[in-house]
Length: 160
Image (cartoon, rainbow, N blue to C red):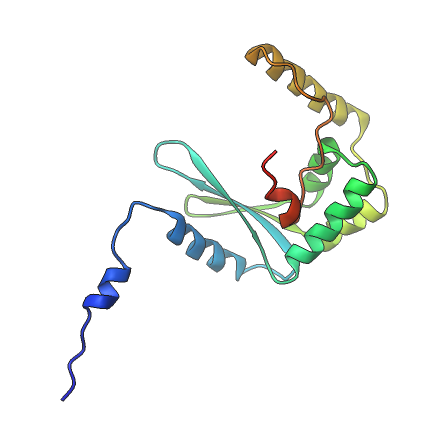
């Protein structure tokens, strides 16, 4: 007769206070419910009012996102263009306290390759926000036209 020992398995489930493993598992479960070639921006709302952001891609998403970013940066697209194109394709949903912004990347690629750009009033709105932030903080913005934010891991993981 064999005896089943649960102690080692229970050690793997010990509370650590680190939400990362749970967030990764939730993110993987959420990603499984989306089509391939999708970029997911997940906002994990915290009980204290803060939030943690996690980026996830479905199958084919990292490669296509980086391709979109390469084309956009080569064409000198900026943050205003990113906001405009992202708004055109963003699908918003919730799973509990997790807010999900999903971006199907094929339509994003089509916008970039066809030359869709932010209208001038949107571009000026971004500049206005940056000027106001500079006045509030006493720090002049480095530029009033920040770079393209990215849909692929190469740009979204940059720390500048």
